[in-house]
Length: 161
Image (cartoon, rainbow, N blue to C red; front, side, top):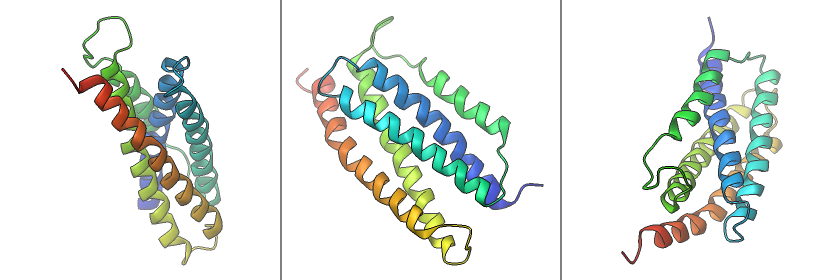
């Protein structure tokens, strides 16, 4: 039976898998847009690195990956594409709003994970406090970069009707 910590980390790994796929898709959809493309490409790379960092932490703690939860995270991101966005076949400004909001939610969840691990690092020498502090700082920076873009997307898509 998996420990509570193992369950917690695998839940976050499933979220990180969905977040990685969403960040990649958002970056791809906005590749030619100078307002959003560069940020989303950088974020997709960072989210990938953060997921790798989580996997390394799980290995250090001898926590295995739950393939069923990973598949669930992958599938949840794919199902999220089916939401109505005001356009049948093309990318919609509403799609961008929702993607940026979900990315903000994902980064907020990831920040919670890193802060939880920081609290545990004082008790567990397998957790490197310096590495976790860097992950916390990066998540905070990601949120700070995402929020103005999210607000711009909202006003562009929903303002002035």
